[in-house]
Image (cartoon, rainbow, N blue to C red):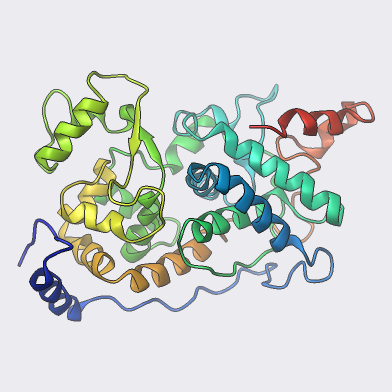
Length: 353
């Protein structure tokens, strides 16, 4: 039996959905820890690492909770492209444009890069250069979830920073577009070891944050995407009255700054923003997972945590691989050409946002 919407006030609808979900989904077992990573990696070398990061991010989010979505998205875009090696943080060089310059990364929040560098400075001041930018980025994403209302969980640490950024073509090939359908998402993420439950759970990251009109305007022009709710369409056309506007809107209209399961309720009401969102409910292969997450936030949280831990271990560098950068935006080798004291000046320049 297909259902077009879920009403928070309708007990009957909720009960019916619960009955449907008896065929549903159980939380997956926690993923294994990648070789070289550990949940206690910095116990002796930087025991206050997680406290430093969480306290600083609490201050940041108290001023602007919107930065939480920016940090979560930054981690996604790092890990999906040549693994969680902080390559997305690197500036371009004579060898070519950086990952930052690729079209999918142009809408990454500039403040997210600044926040990561500020965290790096605080951590290295406390523990010397023992913690990688890749680990700091992973922890920042974890705390972005928790401090905006999501689950609290641990992640394995010990990543090293990559020495090179990916090419534009590699970046484009590994970041599914917002207009991708479910088949494209499933096929793309299957190559990285993700199953349909992972795909739907990770898509739940869209429960916080904003998106530019250009990311979904193909659903508005020249006419309404028939899978989109009419009232939702009308409101979006007010925000995005013409093509190519830089206006933005929330990705979850019900609780845009809270990490919860309302994103899935949006999909059941045909109020998903991107094609890649709404098609998860349209497609029969993933509709049941969306339904289960919409009626059971605990189940969503459990699966999101497992999928995030899995994602955060994609292609990690460990041991003597890579390096631990002294500045997240450039390789250490580049510091040979920096005069003493210049790095501190750079830190001061990026410390405000």
